Image 1 (cartoon, rainbow, N blue to C red):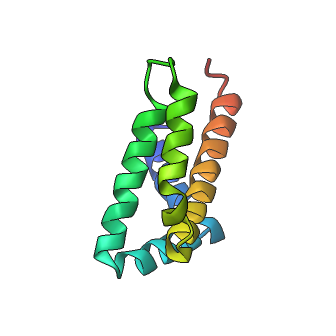
Image 2 (cartoon, one colour):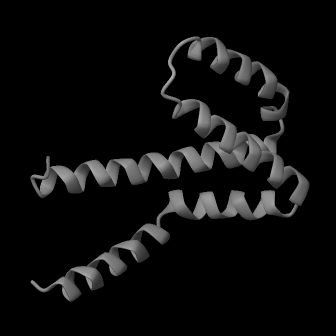
Length: 110
């Protein structure tokens, strides 16, 4: 099989993912959130801070900082638009992680 055929198959697979219920729900929730630009911006700030915390290499007092972060954003997460989007995003991310694990296992790539 040529590289071009593999790329074409990957494009078809991406189209299958876009047709999944998980991806459609993520897109639906994202569009609802984008209708409120200020809230969308705050969600993106939350996501960035969460990402930064999870990827810090300094593990000293990380648990305390994560707890403080969760407390700081607890009220914010009570907003149904925020919570629904974050839940849909997490489900889609898990789907993509599962696909990556499956592909890696199937091609014997260590």
